[in-house]
Length: 129
Image (cartoon, rainbow, N blue to C red):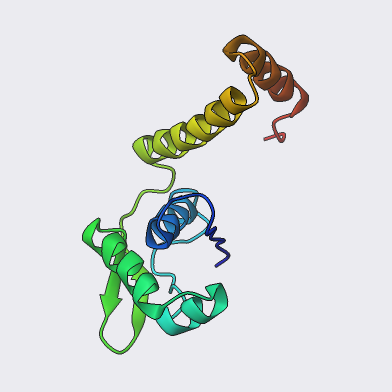
């Protein structure tokens, strides 16, 4: 499982972890029954306090996305639908918010942003089914 955190974006680290793990689950990169890294191992990898990782895991468990098994670890919950429409929309809206904030800071108007998105969308081809 690959996640990245930033000390500079103003979002608490545990929230960043929750969002990224939700994305990995909703995109199908983490599958039902798959084990998440142990709290201490992930904390060590990310150079954060283990309590931060534990808090993120608790949040995910409260939302029904993961389950804890005493002595075994934390696993992606069964029955979590990959790419649930609501979660897809939330992820995209978060990214749109970031893009629009950056565009505003650079004094780029909305029409230009939309034009760039359309151009980019046309240049990225869908894989053949």
